[in-house]
Image 1 (cartoon, rainbow, N blue to C red):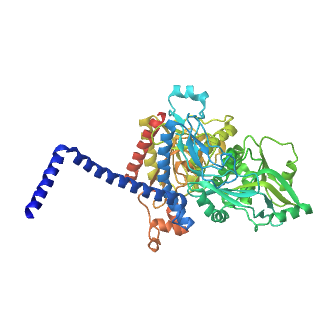
Image 2: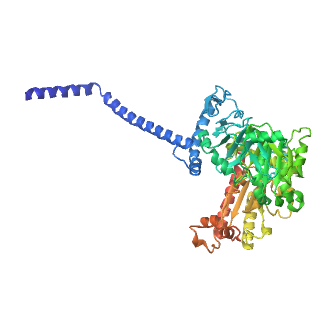
Image 3: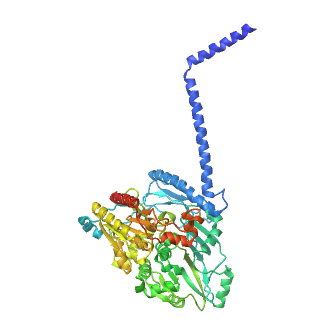
Length: 620
């Protein structure tokens, strides 16, 4: 028995040896198969994790708090957009993207998820179709905006910075955007990470007794950037309540449409056809930075009606408080800033100042014009209830002056610089620059960037300045660096200058430098891609003027390293906490006189070197 078993084992060994000797490659392929199987499992696992993470980012399935989710979505969307941009570049090499789906065919289901498929032939400059609700891809066409009449002269003198502009690179931008429908609807449009908003009411009425706006219980829809349709649908009512904090106008409780019909039957209603923008300018708009946060939103609306499914805006009604109205009534006492910025924004239209609602209603009987009717009203009272067919109410732009092009769909073009690290140039900022130059200098152009360094002095304010020693050291450094680079240096002040003089001082300046303050608002008139360097006092900083308030400027900042601490600082967890929670603490750090240490000057010189290196690379 044992002998038979050993013979059998011997046969197996012989048979196995024979197989190995005859087919050695089988072992190699077996090992390779094991490795490939392991790699495949890892790839499947990675795809599964990626799918779950992406689903979470897009639809927010794990969060119920809209504030928390908004913060998480903003952070996580960057990864989605990065992947989308890569995919868009790959697809762009093979063709362009076009919209398909039920909405693209004009069907009623507005909640249908959009899909995109590849056209066989690329079409340069194709744009988002704004006639349909869309989650889409944004392509841009080039626009010439420099003053070509000055180009040859400027190049010959050698005192300009050569700038090369390119089309915004074709890349996908995700929207959850529904065009406004012609029917009855309230629509909230949201922009950017801080949720800047425009709200559309169709219809809305003005109560003459309380001067409150009356809106109706029609369906409310939300659109915006960085979130899905489902997210906006889920939190639309929350966004509507949030808008009440920034709209400035008083609202009554919502009414039913039957109530409006009763008013019409009683003859108590004056109807205003078309689209009207109504904007209240609060007391704080006496400050040009706060004024810019609201009036530059009007600049956006007038420049992009197609974004809201409109062919035009018919009327603009501004209702400033008494403190702001006097800046329109006596503009010579306030440098003409408020008045002429408004007049530039509404070009080629004309502004009617200090009018009443009754005068506005009379103007409706005049022959229709290509330009909107613009009225600055001193009162909202009326003998009748005024009902607007369609009313747009903008909020205010938070810590900036312009929406970024990627935050909303538009048929307008978009540009950026050709050099490394150049900022994008919001189309709204180009519109403001062109129209301001049209009003002040008779040409809708943007001057060439000249080799000029300007330090904007704010000593007339009596606070938040460099002390005498620090100013002397700063000006000496700027003079020396300017001479090294072939740039002129000057100290300028806007105090006592009218608006035209202020713009003339800055609109062709390559490098502007100043301590934080409202004087930096004028930097929105610098040439696109120019440099802005902001100085902060010890213990204080702010994001208001990053990229010139999103004006397409290359931005640098420096906070001085030494200064006096606030007496009650020990009651807070940090300086930042103190500044955020205590007004006296904020004023202490924000308005302190500034001293510059040797280390401050060394770091500031390094910033200047980076700025000049950036400017040299602007020609691509």
